[in-house]
Length: 529
Image 1: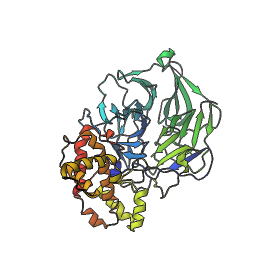
Image 2: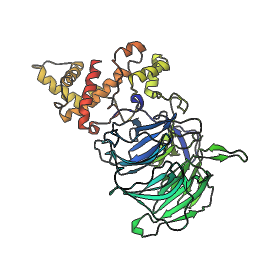
Image 3: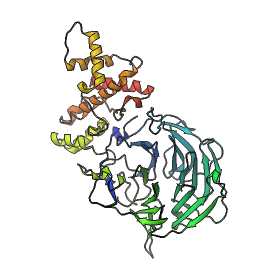
Image 4: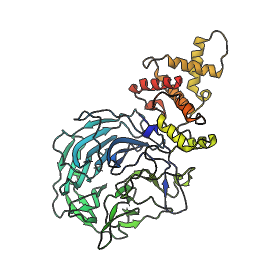
C-alpha cells in the first residue's frame, strides 16, 4: 500500500465554536480535490473513495480513510479487466455500493462517453476481524445482461445481498427504470413496476430505509430541477409486495428542489446536504446549497438541522458517509471550484468537536499537488526556522509526509520496544563471546545488521513486528528530524523519488506475504541513507 498523494499520511482535527445540537468540524487535511466521486463505508472501519472529476480530468484513484487511525492512504490494487488495466477506467458520476467487504461499481461518465461496465473491489476488510487487506478488482461486465450505460444514476444496498439502482441519463434521455442486482448470482433484473411512476430523472438520490427505497430530487425531462420525494415498495422478496411507487408529501421544512445533493441514512434520520438548484425569475442561474435538512423517521417530517458554527461552503456532487454517530463530508463543486476539504458533522457531545486545530485549515483553492504537513511537522518546521515553501517542496520531491502526533501510531524508542530488545539480546549472545557487555547502540546495530543480511524468505514471521516498527522509526528520524538542514543537503541523501508504503500500518498483521520483499527493500534503503 502507498500513502495517498505523494505518500501523505493525514490527520483529522475538529473545530468547536459554540454549543448547540450539532457542530461542523473541518479536518486539517484531506486527499485531493474531486467531485462526482463515490465514498462507501467498508467494514465500519474504512471509507473507500473512488474516481471523480477534477480540472476536467476524470480520475480512477482508490483512496481509503482509516477511521480508527485517522489517516488516508492509497492501496495497491490487483486484478485486471477486459482492457488489461488494473481496475475500472477513469470516471465520475457513477454509482458505488458496499456489501460486506466488497464495493460494487457501475457506469458513470468519462469525457462525453457514458459507461455501462460493472466491477467489484474485494477489500478483504471484515468488521472486528484482523486480516490482511486484499484490494482486488474484478470486472463483471460479462455476467448476463446489464442496464444500459448511464451516469448520474443512484443506487442503494438492499440488506446484505442485493443492490437497487434507479434512473440516470444515457446521453439522450432521462431514465426511470429500476434494476435489482443479486450479489450472489451477479445478475441484474429490471423490476416491473405498476401504477404511477416518478418523472424520469438524473442527479437524484436513492436511499433504502427498511423496506422502501426513497428517491428525492434530481433533474428531469426538459431540464427542470425537482424537489419531490417518492417511495418504492416491493423490493423485499419475503414481503410478497407488488412493486409500486408512492409520492410522499411530508410536513415540516422541506428542502428546496435540487440535484447533485446527498441523502445519508444515520440512526433515526436521513440527512440531506448541499446540491444545486436554480434561482432568478426572468434569468435563471445555478444556486448551490450548504443547508442541512433531516427527514425524521420517527415524526415523519422534514426538519432543519441546527448547527453551532458556519457550515462548509455550498457545493454539489460531493459525498457524505455515515460513520458511527458522525457524518463525513468530502469534496464537491460549486460551479467554479472543485473542493478537496474534509468535514465532520458531529453531535455537540462528540469528542472531535472539543479539539482545537493548531494550524489553519485548507480550502478548495489551495495548492492541489501537495497537501499541507500535519501538526508534528509544522511544529518542527517552526522550531527550525525553515520557510514552509522549502519544506513543502522537499516533501513533494521525497514523496513522503509522516505524522508523529497520531496517538494510534506510536513511534517507540528501541529500548522501549520489547520484541526488538529480545531479538537484540538473542543475536548478541550469538555474536558476542563470554560476558562482554554491549551498549544500546551496539544492540540496535546488531539487529539492523541482521536484517541487512536477511532475505524475505529467511525472516521469521515473529520478526516482522519489530522490523515494521524499526522501519517506521527510521522514516521518522530520516525525514522529520532533518528538516533543520537546508533543502539541498537533505536531498543529497536520497537518490530519486522514494515512496514508503508501510508507514501507516498499525501492526504486522496488516502485511501480506508479498509485502515482505518490498518492506525489506525499503528498510535496507533507509539504512543505506
